[in-house]
Length: 101
Picture 1 (tube, rainbow, N blue to C red):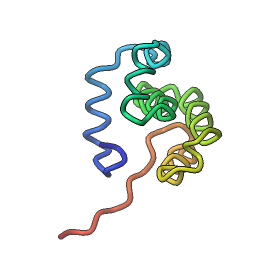
Picture 2 (picture 1 turned 90 degrees about the vertical axis):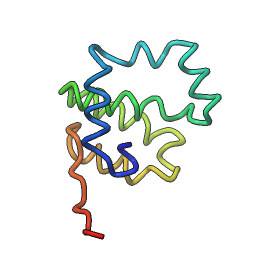
Picture 3 (picture 1 turned 120 degrees about the vertical axis):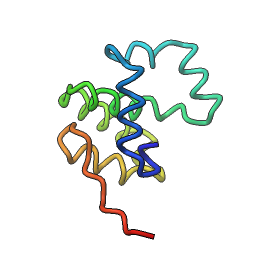
Picture 4 (picture 1 turned 60 degrees about the vertical axis):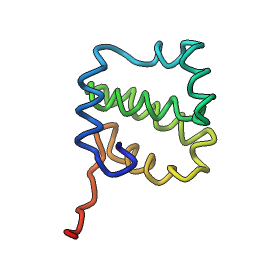
């Protein structure tokens, strides 16, 4: 949702489901296997960063964005998206204005 530009919906989904630090959950072997099966094994730091932004832990969010960018994600199609999040200081990055259709 976040990558598709639906930032508010993404934040709402995370806030509804995340009640604590998601990093231990994302480190669970079942979750890492599911991410690998989905072809998104390197996305775990980005998922953690988004949840940490929503929970207000800006320092940990920046750290997770940096981890994502230092890995394969830094060379992938979502690198600029992640850099925008990281540049926002671990707060949800500003969404560019959408033109009316």
